[in-house]
Image 1: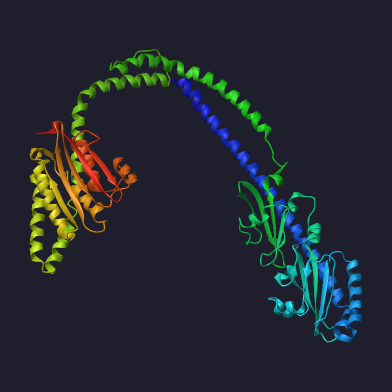
Image 2 (image 1 turned 45 degrees about the vertical axis):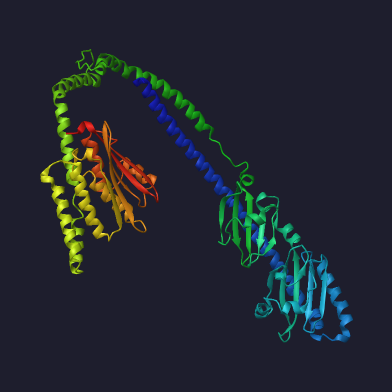
Length: 569
């Protein structure tokens, strides 16, 4: 791809990314603004509903006070004479009926005296069979007594009263004698759900889906949204002042909750799109600015790329022979600018390349050897300290025979480990060193594993880097056998082929998961022994595929070393 094309594409990419960021910023800002407006609208609607509900209850409270202070009701409740029951019933019915004719918010009124008499007018019949006994045995009766004449609000009588399918709010209060302030009766005033809905709802969408719950989360009013009951189970409305936008059943809802002074929850559930309709704002100026900037940018890029890339193309044409291995200096006419500097620096580089090219091969060999030596030093006999501790424990435990065997095996291991400073040892010597290492580990681990070694005699004299197998055996014990429940098995075997030799270390331990194997192959792991072994074998044999790892979680691990016979000495 030409530099001029790259410049154009680069700046176009920057332009597109920057404009995309700006557009996304404006879109998100617009969404935030709309969201805040919709939330505020919902909050205002809920507050309005709360105020209206307070007004309805205050009105009903005042009406109940008028009733209990009525001299007619006071006289009838004081007397309670069964002889006058029919007269009192007529008088009370007429009084209550007249009162309800002037107060359309009340659907029914029930009054009980202390003698078991009941006086009531019920136009809508949402409540049936209210009895004084039912009230006195209700869960809230003691609280009603404690209120000493103040009202108690209950949704649907809190299942104390038998009712139909309609909801209502009951205002219940003790009627006290105005003279003695002693209880002479109980009054229940019921306000229907239909009346409350008519007073609470207005024409705005925000008030059409209001749910009213009492302090025990009993439903007083269910809004017009059909799925309100299911939606109530889909979010937490226990926090006073809760307002949020939530995704429920693949739809976006704005949900607002407020708790009034009676402990009732007023919850607004509305489809976000319904409240946000007509509030989206579109930034036409931004779109026009994008188009103008895009046109100016393209024109400017074409002009700039033509001026900058013309001398570069000439220099590139003169330098093309380099890719064919011809390191020749270039000679073109350039101005006193960066292109001229580039030409001069290139010619200096060509001369230096010619000078250094001869030394590269030797330098490479020296470097690889140095890397091998560094990696060799990373493999420390780190288990020496643990071995000495184990010997001490055996001696203290008077297990002298095992201690002697341990010391002999440890001594033989280090004799072969040091190998008189030789970088290479035979496979036979490496196997002997591993055998002594395994004896030490078996004593340390209390016979945690068994050993199976099968070696082809044809490979015994083949030389390999010192400490080729030992780190793999150590890894099998540490990460395979130790974590296994019960005894394990470590197998070491070789295979002889015409072009290469295979050395394999296998265990039936806990295995390695695929992600860890991938990390090991990519060099992303922390085990110094295994890491150093893989790296130095790759360097020594000048290949990235010397070691292969095959493992299954819970079954075991097999690590295979593929050694080319071209290295045989």
